[in-house]
Image 1 (cartoon, rainbow, N blue to C red):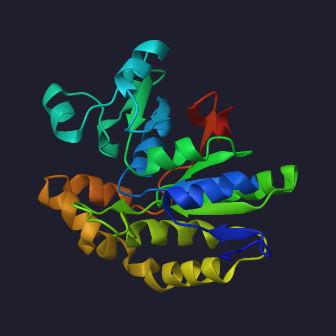
Image 2: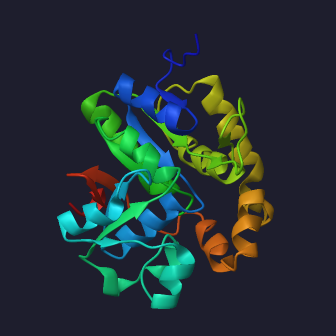
Amino acid sequence: MFDQSNYECRVEWGKRGAREAADRGDITIIVDVLSFSSTVVSAVNQGAIIYPYPPNLDGKSYAEKIGGEYILGRNEAAILGKATLSPVSFNKDHANNKYVLCSLNGAFCCWIAAKVPALLIGSILNASSVAAFANQLKKQIKANVTIIPCGEVWNEVQENEDALRPSIEDYLGAGAILAELEGTKSPEAEVCIGAYLHSKERINELIWECGSGKELRIKGFEQDVLHCSRLNSYNVVPKLENNCFIDALNH
């Protein structure tokens, strides 16, 4: 049976990992660097209020119900000049507004893990801040910590194939956070930290050239890739409260 229960800091992949963390009652940090986590961090840094929502449900109706705006896809929203899943689309004009953000990976993992004692958003942008906050919280509520690199979803999945596509940007983001967490680390966490420490000086280049980075660049979102690889640019910790993410450091 797969188990990291002997350790205080763990790493699990994707939606199944989010469910395992929720079942254990761990402090859970969702990491989806390109781009859900980076978008939430960037939006909350600008004062926006973000409601994560799974893409298989009706996000538009939910947005109407809460008096928020449903975030459109990058291309459609860019034409209309609205906030998008692109993290660089948020600015101070979006402060205090509610947005419903869907994604196949990060938002879905948030939905699954919503019942945990504390659900935080981590990225390369806020790795040190979210680790420091998790360390304080860990002492206060006496809970372990699980980091969830979300990964991507393969296109055209055939029968009997796995849909999860592990992604190095999420693994490196998870490692950046784990490297500053206090407490015993599982072997899985130790290896994740090692990958980050080995890659730290080249993290921008690696994310630019990785499969997910290329995928976004081909679609014309080079600025997203550059933005999402900026280590510790923001001192902000999105924390889920009342179904939305707010900055835990300012509440």
